[in-house]
Image 1 (tube, rainbow, N blue to C red):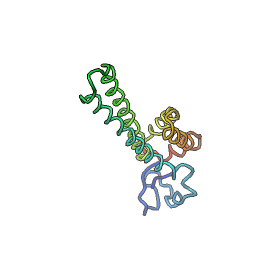
Image 2 (image 1 turned 120 degrees about the vertical axis):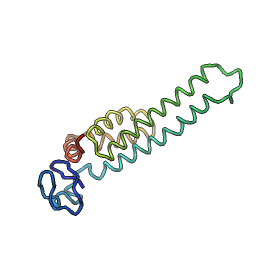
Image 3 (image 1 turned 180 degrees about the horizontal axis):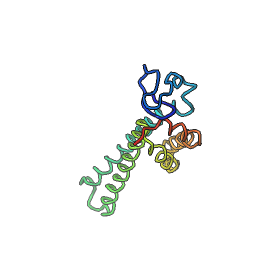
Image 4 (image 1 turned 135 degrees about the horizontal axis):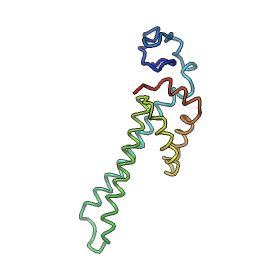
Length: 155
């Protein structure tokens, strides 16, 4: 549990925040947690799942590009293009994994990175579009920014 005043991590059994002294019991309960508290964990897990989905074609394309399974009459650009495309998938997977891990750890930078890449992922039909819409719906409103900052861990 986190203090909704300063964002400090508070033990579930604590009655006051050790950093600012605010009563911790008032922050518990779904009504007091706010709009995004229930969605951040799901959103982080979905970004990690998207990373996993991008790893599969990335590894396959890199492996296909470096293998000798193509006949000799295949143009040379095909064997050069496949690993490049695979590396793009792997880079996308790494970025999605960083976003997911950052959101689960409530890092301050993760919200803005998720909003930017959530907007870009709207073009990635169908799963990226759904993830982008959900990301923007959860994190974009001004109230979400205030609540996320309250629960974000300081760097």
